[in-house]
Amino acid sequence: MITLSAFQSIAFCEAFRRLAPLRAAELGCAAEAVLDGGLQVVARLRAGEVFDLVIMARDTLVQLEAEGIIAAGSRVDLAVSPIAVAVRAGAPRPTLRDGGDLRAALLAARGVAISTGPSGVHLRTVFERLGIVAELEPRLKVVVGEPAAAPVARGEVDLCFQQLSELLPVPGIDILGPLPDDVQKLTVFSAGVHARTPHPEQARAFARALGSTASAAVIRESGMQPLGAGT
Image 1 (tube, rainbow, N blue to C red):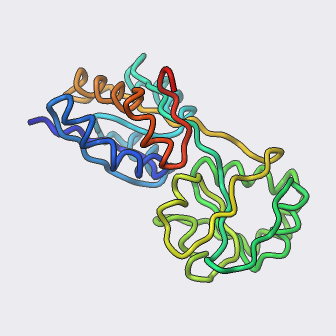
Image 2: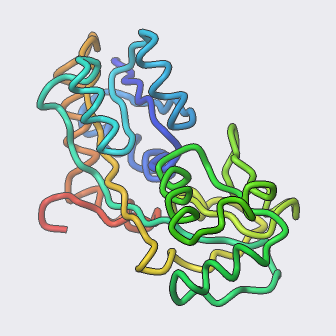
Image 3: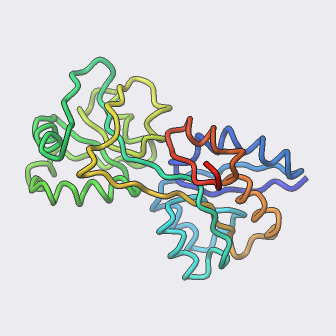
């Protein structure tokens, strides 16, 4: 039996963990996740590592397709993900109605954690827009190798920001909800087939199955909005 490797950043991994056995069994194969941070995924692919599928932010997959790493026309959009905010379980919950509230919460925090992925990239632009880069930089923790919520759960920082789907599985935190609309960025996560996979047809079929209506409920439960037709 073929085992397909799905190289991915963390955002879709909880949905993948639940969906992979179901969709793979329907196709008569197996599938396993290989996880790394978003920047590391791109670096490893550009260094020549080969996997059957790649699952990550759509904009990055489009770039990798332009570079010939992802097979042309193989991309399947899976889900839309919001960025969310969390504090340590039981900690005071700041009001976050808009960017002004967010600015006040950031300036009051002992420390703030972000990731190296799309959420972290976006938050840096938000900090610039709010005019607090200089004040925040000494208290900013860029987390690599674990969820951005981990230092919050340990009490090392007060606030963290990451894709909602990445915060939901982390114990020891309270999720305040998504970023306010005026500073939110929704990210589309997609699956693409590696141009050098030895199993192109099976990989394409599996990507389509992940994005099908049959996968919608699990994707929604993982904190994302499914993009399968009819969902």
